[in-house]
Length: 484
Image 1 (cartoon, helix red, strand yellow):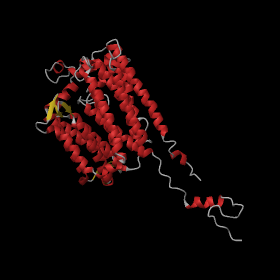
Image 2 (cartoon, helix red, strand yellow):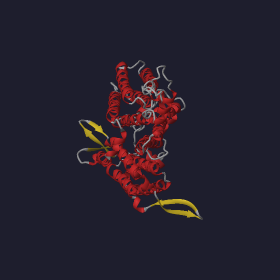
Image 3 (tube, helix red, strand yellow):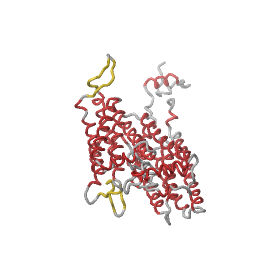
Image 4 (cartoon, helix red, strand yellow):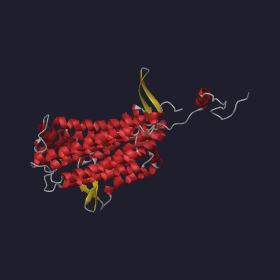
């Protein structure tokens, strides 16, 4: 007799999310092809010559990832892979439209990185069969992340570009190790905070006003992780002049600490330490003062016309966003391509100009939906480690988009970070696809129904009573002949 609800966990129901995923991936592929056709018509008056090859490469890579998920993670969230694909396709289309070179070399390089990124996603799905096993090596992952993050500081290996030392030159290519360093560091934080969350959540002294608790201070001996994270963020800022990475890692740490402990006091103390560190950085480092000056006085003629590091890039980006209006100028019009880093740091500005506020909001909604699906996976996770792991990566994407969007709209100082899946650059794109592979594995483990434990003693007894007696008097359950 079948257990009630067993059909819901049977193999026959497993392909249903994958069918949804297949249809959404087909739609994402259609958006990419249609976008490339539109870009070709509006820029050159014809469809791109090598569009069939580009479409074949992009489609084959996404199809391979889909097939891997269908057989290896059949219960994974069906929206994660299509969201990553449509965002990557939008980025590829926008970079092709902005690339004014003869052979669109930058667009082809980005397509190559997209294929490598989907292959990396497939490799993660193959290699990480049980994500919870990653918590066995927390300190090894922490060392690996620190080495990657500090690699650009090694003399002769690191390369300083655009005022920041965050690249490593390898065989003519530049790689940004900090994009990959975020992955093992977040895994380490998830493992560490999962083990220490009860200790960190313990309250120390409580501050009350007329008997009403206002704030609870943690024990002083537990401030070590916060102090180490704060000092490490300052070290990254000093060594690499990478304001965005140091800010991003510290914010992710605060978010994961709050998710692990549920105590607002940690967030308050962290923000106070952040304000103190930002003030000290403003006094000690000229490039931080320059970023703040551009942020506050961007339209000042002296700041705008500064020979090096002026506000020209930021102000022109604001003008491009204004020129886009509600529906945009079109992929073949506008002046966003003349702005420095229009296809990387300012990719949201380019989307806002060419697709208008409507297109920009659509892209931001897709990014927000990706974070929401990750948050849903974190809520469904059965283990603390996987909850914190997915929460950390979700906050990484959310804060990264906030820092980029806030910088180009002059809400916060411009930090020079990249938007996940959209911006030109192989390091950011490949690392984002690696995160998708890990999310797929975690969501598969969360959504997979528990194994059928089989009938219990009470159910067996019920079945014995319910079975009718045979005509020859032999018991149908035991085969024994009852006594006369």
